[in-house]
Amino acid sequence: MIPKEKPVAVNVKPERFSPIPKVRIGKKRNRPQWLLGLVLTLLGLCFMLPFFWMVISSVKTDAEILALPLTIWPDQITFEHYVNLFVNLNFLTYLKNTILIVVASFFGLLLTAMAGYAFAKFTFKGSKVLFIGVLATMMIPGQVTMIPVYLMLNQMGLTNTMTGIVLPGLVGAFGVFLFRQFMTTIPDELLEASRLDGASEFRIFFSIILPMSKPILAVQGILTFIGAWNSFLWPLIIANDESLYTLSVGLALLQGQHGGNYGLQMAGATFMVVPIIIIFMIFQKYIIEGYNISGMK
Amino acid sequence: MRRLLNDRAPYLLIAPTVLLLLLFSITPLFVAFVMSFTNMDLAGIANFANVDWIGMTNYLEIFKDEVFLQALSNTVVYVVIGVPLVIALSLSIAIAINFGRGKVFEWFRVVFYMPSITNVVAVAVVWGFLFNPQYGLFNFILNTVGLPDVPWLQDPFVAKLSLILLALWRAVGINMIIFLAALQGIPRTYYEAAALDGANTFQQMFKITIPLLRYAIFFVTVTTLIGWIQFFEEPFIMTEGGPLNSTTSLALFIYQNGFQLSNFGYAAAGSVVLFVLIITVTLIQFRVQKNENPY
Image (cartoon, rainbow over the protein chains, first blue to last red):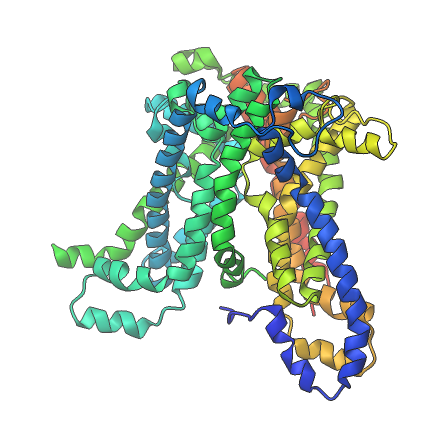
């Protein structure tokens, strides 16, 4: 496990006390700093451009969207497209289904954490082989399993059901791996002490392991939320009824049926993207540092 | 009873995960393999008696199928152009951000990472609008600075590049974060020592930074390669493989044959080809990595 690195700015400090004259470094480094900042800003603006255009277009009137030359800022701001999504289209149903999937995926996260704990803190018959087997499933591409899983779910009568949509992606090997990596760092003495006090293994998991795994739970929780909120392929394959569509599937359908209505499409896209951006803004520190925790370097 | 539960604890803890993976990941792999030797279709689903063992027929046919060959060559184009671009851009951005000082540079991480977390359908819908020949922002910007229109999604070759552009935009963030994590693990003392010896910034970058990032670069290369061989959502939502199958990827070919044409056996054969391709490329990568002189 890697000790958490401080942000770059803090790491720099010792240099000030290094024998190299401070002035020389300052002068040499100052110009590149500005230049880098400028280049990154321009590139960053390009990266944000699609988001900007999405939000701007979603509040333009239909006439203005199709008027040339394009207007960078809307003449008249309207929320009619957002109202349309919920009044004339079924976005409320899609939202409900998407939230259901999010809730189910958190249950999956719990199962993943349990497995990660078992692989981290127990040596049992077959534990090594099983763990390698779990990791090996990461190598199997989704396109290979897609058709057989569909046929299997069909045999079980689970097509066109919420269970069928949720079940195939409930647990993932990568999550098990990350939980295991983190939980191996929890000291054994702590678990032994609780065992001596007579706590059951499940009690230990829920009242010691889970609370101590907050950093990794935060990362995995956010990533699970984002994944579930964005889930597209399984709902698309499994759901025949519009009543089971998720936001992604609904938006794809909207694009197919209202191809020329860009205002409506942009409103739908904004409605999907903005919650994720907000959640990401709040938790970005955990997500980005999570990659340091997971030891990916 | 409690005793029993406690003794079996590890098995009970892993049971749900292992069973789900067995059911939805490992079993389907074998089912796909077996199915690729049959003519499984809609009639076959209704009644297994309609399914015949047809040996290698699917494989022989698929390599004569022009759409499949087109999809294969498109996928090669995606990988050959896309993967180096992703690595070069995400590594450059990571180095630039790591080199910078001050709070501003921390915000750049957020900016470049953001496209990675947003919904692919929403993003494809937005980019489809940006690419629109008449009302799209991209052509408007080009015209404003005096350049002619670009047939973003209409020309067979340009369409491929447009999809790569979108996928690049989405892929940079996550890889940049991985590179940043690795960069921050390089001790500052290395650079201080090099600076004392008179090494300039570029020498430091190519003699210290890049060599020490070998493992991160390897990791990103393998995962990006695997990801781009499975290129799917972008062509699926934006072009449906058009114009004239010029953007159909292998994964899209499999999806279309499986779920739109219901040729399950044939699609399974395609997916086995895809699987073999991924395994081969990954093994080659590991071999190359092993043969290189480690530091």
